[in-house]
Length: 469
Image 1 (cartoon, rainbow, N blue to C red):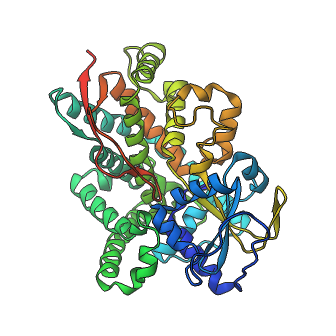
Image 2 (image 1 turned 90 degrees about the vertical axis):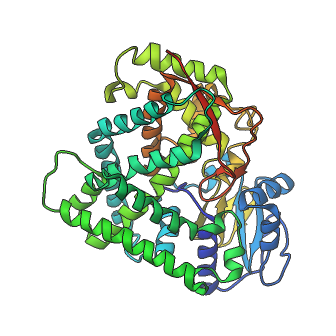
């Protein structure tokens, strides 16, 4: 994943903690507007907690002080950038470091991967090849899983309330595990076991929804039960991956999976294990949430759903099957997914550690300052996105809008592999569902948003469906 990969609160805590130990603290804010520390030890941590999430804290901060703002995490200065214009000044398109990977490796206690530019480019290429090959080789599988879900929904009476989040997580788990790890996950029991471990590991990340609590409570190392559950889950997942890596080495299979690209690359077993773990976990959560939000927004916009139906049913596929050759022609569907990512603020925050002293507008950013990219703020900035709170896929007909979106890492050359994977999986699912079903929201339902590593709904999202023909 590139510069604008997903960023979790946990990463902020881990990175700031490392900076505090490695570099001397500074109270010099370099004239950047913002707020002073609320507490000597914790800085503005109480303000973040009171805001509900880091994203909501940043929204308020940028509204008050502008596109470049500062605050304090402990005794460390943090700078946040909140418009496309200031982000353009800070982005280095040649950088290949991956904040999401760094965060996950820290949580998983992984050490490999030296961060050398040539190594990062090589691994990026392996990732890209892995995504491309697994999607092409397993397209029939993805279509089969989508049609199985369609058949399940078609069997329900029209009054049946469908738990969308639950179904999308199950669909994502089945899709990702089989396309990343192969036939070992054709058995539903294996998928269920993996999903259980996936949930255990991500419960470790509970600081997503209550920033600072785990940090102040002492986190994983001070909770024996929590640490044991995490380590047991990690051991089981690693055992599965090691077995698959061993089986795939030196052998040819009719179907290519993501791991094959890593096995065929010049990586050692530990690097293959780590990259497979990170990609599978990240792809599962991103795919599940993208599918969930896309369907949620479709249920609230009859016009958008109608246009998507016309594209899939009339313009592209007709009465024929969904195929790899035609899937790329779904221009409007891609606009729907881009607008889903934007409106949902799918990944609300990313970050980078300032390598050398830099300048944004008239402000100097000191070396070793943690710089946040407030993507959730940027994605609803009215100066870039007219009517920012409206779900309007047509906005992505505008080339300048798409360029801004690409700059943020949500499309184009900056697009992360996990999101690219999720786009394809969601496109196939929507193509199958919308051609046969009308999708409806449940009357009176209010979906509240929870801003974590990946944005989700606070509670289950319920929908109903009816047959088109």
